[in-house]
Amino acid sequence: MQERESRQAALGLALAARLLPFLYGWEHYGDAPVRIELAERWARAPHLWRGFLEAYQYGPLQLTVLGLIARVLPGRFVGPRLLSFAAGMLSVWLLWRITLRLAEPALGPTAALVAACGLALSPLAIQSSTTGASEALFLALLLGAIAMVLDGAIVVPALLLGAACLVRYDGLLYVGLISLLWLRELGLFRSAALFLIATAPMLFWLWLNYHYTGDALAPIHHIDQDHRELAAMGLHWFGSCRYRAYCLAYWPIAVCGIATPVLGLAALSGAARALWTRSSDGARIVALAWIPAAYFTFRGAVLADFRPMSRFALVAATLSLPFAWSILQRFGRATLALTFLVLVATPVALAAVSWNRNGSLAEWARPLSPISSLPPGVEDAALWLRANAGADDFILVEGVWDYLDVPLIFAAHLPDDQWIREAWTTDFEARLLRHTPTLAVLLYQGNLHNDRRASPSAVESSLRFTFAGVDFCRQASFVYASIYRRCPR
Image 1 (tube, one colour):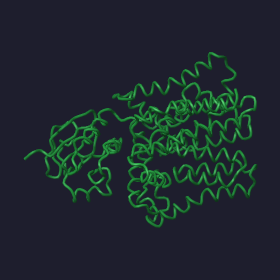
Image 2 (cartoon, rainbow, N blue to C red; image 1 turned 30 degrees about the horizontal axis):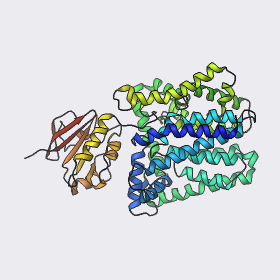
Image 3 (tube, rainbow, N blue to C red; image 1 turned 180 degrees about the vertical axis):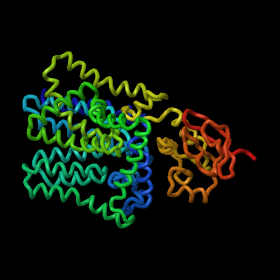
Image 4 (spheres, helix red, strand yellow; image 1 turned 45 degrees about the vertical axis):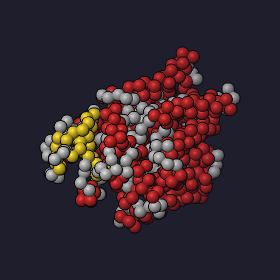
């Protein structure tokens, strides 16, 4: 197979796999709705971010780019997806290029095609590149930096790594690892230069956080606290031994889900072989992929202060794919046919069991599905609000442990000033003082009934409830969500 044919086939497959999710998906996972909302707020009056006070735990670079896009392209559903879409397509091409560089010349185009097709049809890669989440942009920046480091460059990959760190903070792990793993090839001076250039933007961002909050690491401390709470929840539900075993086995299993099961196993086996044989750049790529995974596994399985998520395993899966063909080439056509069949069937099956579906299987598949979706009832509630809420309505929305209030509010696409969000504790009370709610949304397992101002009946199964002396009567009920309006006097 020629290089040009290999590249075109991979990119064509990636494009085809992303069209329907791009058109019909909803922003849900990867904090996409919150990122876009924060960017829209910034876009109304662009300025230097005030650290954690405005960007919270999110990297400022993606928020800034999304804000600039919002000033050019109207609507919140197109611009952010176009950015992720472009980054997702670029990632497929960059992985193709990296694999071509790593593989033996005779096997290069085929190995590159297999790796790029694995990313092109990865259900999580499809989802992240068709919503406003951060993973696709981060992956493109990281792969671009790796590709250029393999070619011996310093300044441009350092700038790409610095940008990646301002998209997702775990980029700092890869800056340090790249500087150390390629120390012999780059030399001490050039490796140190790469590290310093890449970390300079993050140092400035840490200073901004210190200036405005008094804590340079405020975003990272917030993320750590969030994961400690998620880990505590996991320990409560699974018990100590089962939770630690879950964290220990999570990463390889997640990679087999992200890269699809058969190709994922081949990628894991090929990566282990490359590390064992110490195949120069190949071994370094594997170390770059799996040292962070080992660190997070230690935190989850031993310290029990971290909750692994499939999105964190996307880099490990992507950087393992270049080694899949070194294993698959040893098998016959039947194995290759099975690999391709499972590669196609996995995203299709995940979409089939989650799109427009309720139930435990749908909720299990939804975070990994190629098409980002909301539970049907939550989507219906959002569309009801969009159709029935007037410009003079103010909507009280309760918080819930699984954050379903966030995508519901985002999908309803009403002006920010109309929302009174219990989960946004920084301005919840202030908004209640300014406006008396005329509509309310209660969610399954929501928190409003714990508020002393709410009646015990403030749960989504009730026909009516009271909050702060205002009576609300149910107007519509959906799975997971009920909508209420102030009762007529």
